[in-house]
Image (cartoon, rainbow, N blue to C red; front, side):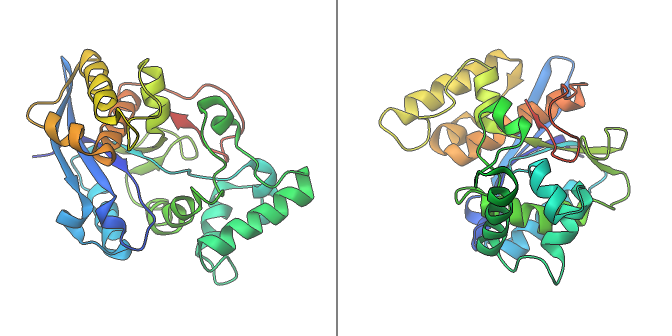
Length: 265
């Protein structure tokens, strides 16, 4: 039996499994019903390689129809033009190639040097980042997720049968994989975009966000305590909410280029 919808709070850390959380849910006539919420370590192992390989395998299971992954899928068009032949597939080939960056630090350095030379600014955001309040995809806080997400996850999905990465490969596939950003999802729901993780009052803000999610026709069943206790788990729930909307027909509004990608909410 399958879940239909996967929401993933991603991690590019060396022990990625500890911070990578997955929410599995089912679209029903009443909305979205959460079936499972788990940490990658408990399913596939703590190490980055095993956690990412397990995630890819789960995404490509026959029962999965829509997936929301919380990491930047691409780079600003100006950087793509200089380093990746102007295309999204070129980005995947660059981060995976022998002549590409060896690690997230080298990846970030190459992007920053290129962006500064071409645009005059080191940290350039995609159009979708500017619209959704997201960070530059190669800044220090995000670079590991963009690098490993592109190389180890999207690079394995780009040619997978029945899988389409949206919007680059369209949305006409058995499984549609979309970029999501929990803060933007919570903002769309009218609740806390920040301050719900480790600051004073974080637990009360997580509770507020959970109430907003439930009011959006999402049945948490017996998983509310997990989301209330762990902000990474809660982010995977937000990812599932946006992935469910993609499954229901949500489409990107024009901004930037398809090669840059789009954050779905």
